[in-house]
Length: 115
Image (cartoon, rainbow, N blue to C red):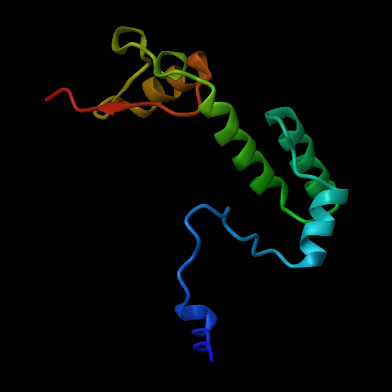
């Protein structure tokens, strides 16, 4: 008479077998019929489609797309050298600050304290 097999949780996984797919049949069928995006461009289109179908908010789509675009850039692409920065003096008069903001047309400024 052979020994009864231990319960599944007590069995050791075969180290040579591939990991078991934990998706159910329906999830695997959906993936087969409608596979996910294969490229960054396809992912962007999928995000736009999801927004159009009101599955995600426009702000969420813009944020995710921004993250994907940022991943393609180097630090040099997004940074400005200190000598080329338009900075605002914290002690400057309001009209000077307003002129600087309008003339440079930036949306954000580093502010410094000269003292």
